Length: 170
Image (cartoon, rainbow, N blue to C red):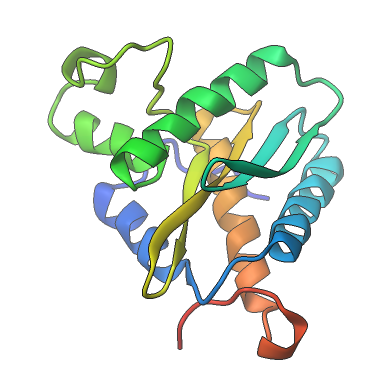
């Protein structure tokens, strides 16, 4: 994987989210996406924790060697941003940076509860909206975000209606 650019533009992140809208997302899809992220992380030697949720239910979680309980806390903080704003944690942070401020300075939310750092991405279903989150923690925020986006792109690309795998709208 090439090193991701440190800060994507707001428009670039919005386009990622638009492009990665899925037809559906099942428990099996969560397992497939999570397993793909684990495989990617193993190949890269990435010391990450991975979490996938649909609503309040955790469907997948894996902590790889080198990750710690701190990564689980970061997952929770980034995930809460997605749940509150309906956008990726990286996009929320980028919107604040584009205004010349930070999320921590201007959101008035407790930074021990919310973190607008890259790595948590909405699971968005066509016709339903945001139904869950996929989150990675353990790398610099741009790399956490890029890993999630790459996994979602690969996941969607291998989708076919008969396999039960979610895919982007046509």
